[in-house]
Length: 377
Image (cartoon, rainbow, N blue to C red; front, side, top):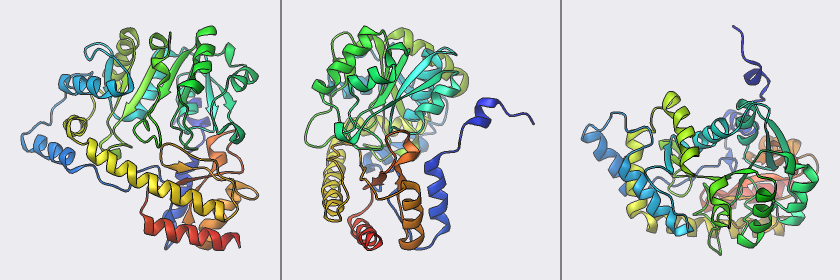
């Protein structure tokens, strides 16, 4: 059977490769998974159970349940967002679907999408599947992996059509506050760029509040904000996300969504609504636990002599490693049974680093870091 060039030529996920290697080995501690080790808050799970008990197993409106869209509008107000639940919010099957819809709805074949790197591995393929060319924009450890206007200029991003980025960042844990985002916003306005801002980790910002580029002057009308329930509410398997954007963008995204997904999972929508109504305390407890783990892992890596900047968001640290990062990760897995992801998987700028997830328990983190220390000796 003929396979389309775009699918055939897209490389498999480098993260998935390490998952599969880890699954084949015994006594492995995985620090490679970008998934909370917590379960979804009980109130959210109970809402899902009750929805099933009541037989709520049908499609919902394409855009998602109206009460959930109203709940999302209230929820994102904490980040100074003001979106009309009737025309400016789309509920999706996870944030990943929202990214894909934004690309396919707003990017024409032959357009250029600027993708800061290192970054989440799906952005480049999503742009490719939309028929766009990908323009890498390296970010650097010496800039705390923030996206700078110099990096945008040096990469030629002024000639791009769309810019996608994610802060708090996967894989580095970097955060950009409003002052750091302002020149990027100015660049986007100057060069008439559409911006896709993946803010799935917004609630997992440590030591400060999350700032969104969409709230800066002149940015709301050119920005699609992506959010979701997977990370902050530990609901990865329920696949529930959303997009916030001007009505014309949401209408275009929904046009694709209604032909492909129809609607996000109904059970998940009931769980999501309850999560944003009543689970702030559970989110705060998980965030505090991640923060303790973050400080512990950073401290241990620095004790080992591994350079590691102060990650301030998400649940990853991104230490440098000696030698080739892919060989380091494979040898660490083989010799000590610790799975991490080589930084080069996330693109230019990730070479020589490791993505280490601390979304696992303290006992596992203590044992894993002890093994890494022994491996380095």
